[in-house]
Length: 266
Image (tube, rainbow, N blue to C red; front, side, top):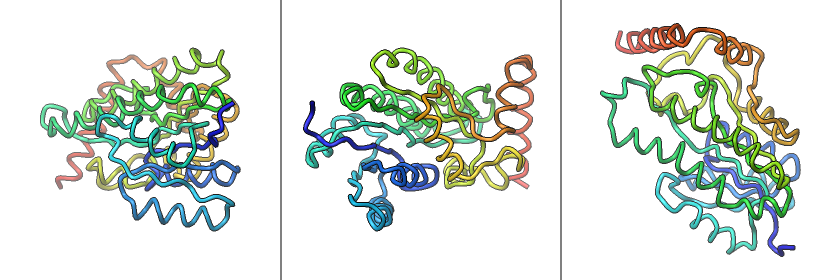
C-alpha cells in the first residue's frame, strides 16, 4: 500500500461550482487539494474549510491552461506526501459568439483547458485512484447534449467531456474506479461574465444554484452514476433532445443565441 495520504483534487476551486464542490467534499470528510490561478481566493477557501476540519486543504496555485499541469500538480502533492483518491475536473470556461468572429487564440485556450487539461488529469492519477478505490468527477454541461451555433467551440468541448467521461466510466469500472460526468444547466456564477453573457442565462426553471449542483454531483459520484443532470427541467431537456430532429435543435439554439446577442447590443 502507498504511504501517501489520499486527497480529493479539485480544479477551478476559486469560484462558483468549484467552491461548492470543495465545501461538499469537505463536509463529507475528504481531505482536499485545491487548484486554481487565484491564490487569494484559494487561501480564503482553505481558511474557511480549516476552521471546521481537522486538516487544512493543500493549496496549489496553477494556470491549468498551460501544458504539463499533471506533472506540476503531482510534484506539489508529493511535497505534502499526498496523492489523489478523487479527481474533480471543474476548471473550464465558455465563450459566446460566432466561432469565426471570436478571438481564435482565446477559443484554442478554451479547448486546452476544457478538453486537454481535463483529459490529462483524468488519466494521470489512475493508479492512485485505483489504490484508494476512488473516482473521477468531470464537470460537463447540458450544452454537451446539444449542437451549439453561437457558441460552437464551447458546446463542442462539453460534448467531448460527456463522451469521454461516459467511456471512462466503462473502461475504469473493472479497476474499482467510479467515473461520473456532471452536466448542469445554467448556474449563476462568474462563468457568464467570462463567457460574455449579459442578463439571464436561461429561463428560471432551468437554473440551478452552484450549491445544489455540487451536492448532486457528489451524491451521483458516490453512487457510481455515469451521468448526473441536476434539476427535473434539465433532465427533461436532455430527454427531449433525443427525439427532436437535429436540424430543429440547430435552429432553436441559433435563434436563442441570436436573441441574446441582439439584447446585449440594444
